Image (cartoon, rainbow, N blue to C red; front, side, top):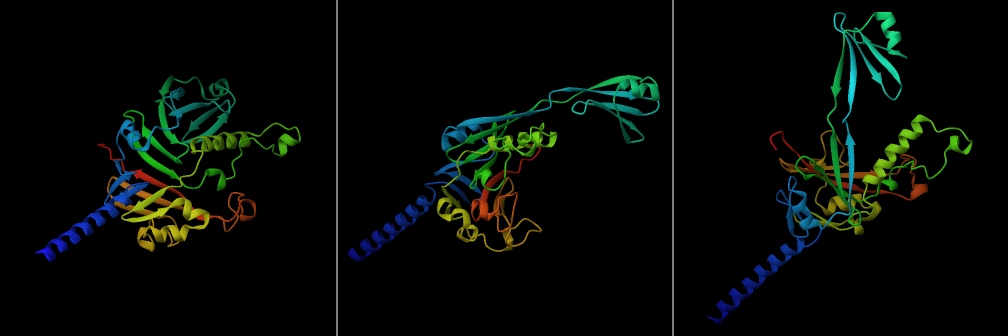
Length: 301
């Protein structure tokens, strides 16, 4: 009888130990287990309200808002001849279409003098689109949200800051034109504006925590900037089965366990010169650049 009790006790201890080990895997970082998503043992989900998401992640540091549209443009119509024209705001010129071929004119008067008076003017309203990006700077996480319902879209886990793989022109260093007293070119201004947007959208820090996929855990801080192979092996994602179609076995990984969610693990290597950031300039990189958890949002969601 005593032996039976001892066996039962040992079995119970082993079960508790196994349960404890399983719970330990869920204690920190991001966990994908059987198609479900967790952060620090709390279940989260794509498509959930931002308020519930912050219960698990903590309050975000800032919101980056990007708006587009919201303006009204005009189209001049020559109905009988099927001609039409648009005003090009940036170029301050008019684009005229004849038989689907475009011609550029300096003024509407110039077009009218050549093709006659237009029949009507059509106003085209572009809807205002507001994109919200919630950013956890210290954690290295950002997520997009759908403004209409304020629900979580895609989750971006930044493991390599944008300034380490992309040479951004933020206007901090004068270029050739500025050094010689010449005005900035349109191309330089546009690049600086785009680079500034990329910089502001990126969290200030890199994610250095754990990431677990079906029981396989890696620590991004320990993986470091040259640990691509170590990271993929640690997650059990070796081989071509996890590649996007057409990619080689050394490229980024694509996990798709659930219809509504899939994950991309992107690779960055600067073994050769890339965007000006060579190994001589910033050191050697062959690492996980980011991990993005995507919501496969259908039309009825």
